[in-house]
Structures are given as structure tokens and as C-alpha cells.
Length: 258
Ligand SMILES: Cc1cc2nc3c(=O)[nH]c(=O)nc-3n(C[C@H](O)[C@H](O)[C@H](O)COP(=O)(O)O)c2cc1C
Image (cartoon, rainbow, N blue to C red; front, side):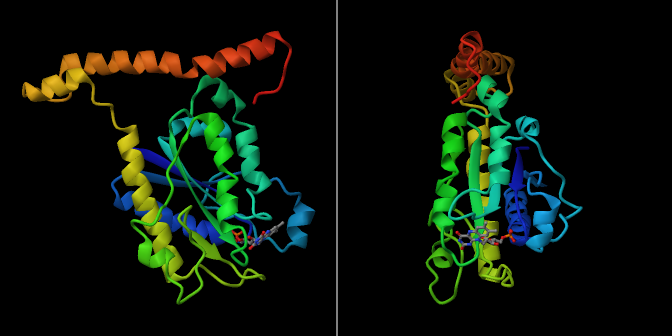
């Protein structure tokens, strides 16, 4: 069964609430979903000044090295001036070795967000795409197909867009995710899991097609061998570029990975 992580940062809990709905949607699509939070980077006195509550006990922290355990990711975070919060950037800043080994290459990822007024809901997600491009990850947008009535609803305020589900927290954070916003988050989880599971499924090779045509099961030995060979050559091929780039950086004394 495909296993996906919902990786969040949330100061006041709006993103956490959406994350739980995304998880339900993933599970409804028959995949595993685990919700995590990235470590807080703001000092305690600043958190007190902005009246941030304690982090929830039921959501464990995740670090960059843990990302390799999952088949894909749905990242959720509030906007910070229309961009990704630094807590999420820190996770990717710590993922240089994963870039060097190609560990996240072709893993699918999606995003959802929370804004105070709606200002920046799309640019926040868009600003996160650079992380995916450099890691060679595959962006799975929400789009309109499954959520047309929700996203195009202008009868009430809602924070979602084709870039991902969202909520509008209000300027004082008092507005909580509405049933409409929760429904969109659920659909995003479901839709993501359906697409991402296909991407993580074993590739159909000519040998598996021939075996299927000959009435053999897809787990027959020749097909398995073929898959193993394909995977092996892919595994050694994928990281080559970034790994050798990292190596030449080491040689030249360069410490910057781009
Ligand atoms: C430094 C900072 C910048 C923010 N920038 C924006 C913004 O550009 N647009 C907006 O609508 N809300 C903005 N907000 C409000 C947050 O988006 C809001 O607090 C958040 O969506 C609540 O989600 P959470 O409960 O998961 O933390 C900002 C908040 C902070 C602390």
C-alpha cells in the first residue's frame, strides 16, 4: 500500500485542521496517510508575543532524512507575505543530501495553505514549486476537475484554488475552516492519493505486457526480474547527475548545492 506523509507547519492550527481532512481523503482512496509537523524555528519569546498555542501532541515532528520513508507528500503551510514560511524552507534546506542522492526524485507532491485574508493563497503554493523542481519531484495540482463546485463557489468565502485546498483564517485568526473548505481538503487528499499511487505503481514493461498477454500473473519470475533490472538501472541512473555534481563540488571545495 502506498504511504503518504502530510507535512505541515501551523502557528494557530488552521493548517492542522485541514491536514486531518487531507489524511481522511488519502485513506478513503486506499492509501496510508500520516500527518507530521516540521520543527518550529521561531524563538519561544516570539511565539509568546504572537500568542501562538503549544504544538499539538498528537502530531509528531518530521526531519528531512525521514522523507525517504514515504511514496509522496502533501505539504500544508500558512502564507507568509504570499510565500512559504521559513519553517518549511528549513526542511528543504536540510534536504541537500537527499538532492545529492536523488532520494526524492519523481516522488509526487501537492500543497495546501491557509491565509488570513486570502491574499497570497496562490503565490504561496507557487513559491514552493522551486523545491520540487530542484529535487525532481512531481507536482500534483488540485485543478478544477474534482472540485469545480467548491473552488468556483462565490456564494461564500473560501480559501482554496486550483493550486491546492485552503482556508481563510481572518485577520485575527478567529475564522475556522468551513465545511466547504474541509470538503475541498478531503477531495484533495483523495485525488492526490489516486494520482500518486499510479505514479508509485511498478512500471509496466514490455516483459510484463507479454507475460500478461500469455496469461501469466504480473508477479511471475521473469516479470519480477525485469522489474528488478529496470529499477536497479533507474536507481543507479537517477542520482548520478546530482551525486556527481555534489562530488565535483566537494573536489572544487565548493560548499553550495544548487
Ligand atoms: C509574518 C506573517 C505574514 C503573513 N502574511 C500574510 C499574507 O500575506 N496574506 C494573508 O492573507 N495572511 C497572512 N498572514 C496570516 C496567516 O496566513 C494566518 O495567520 C494563517 O493562515 C493561519 O494559519 P495557521 O493557523 O495554520 O497558522 C501572515 C501571518 C504572519 C505571522
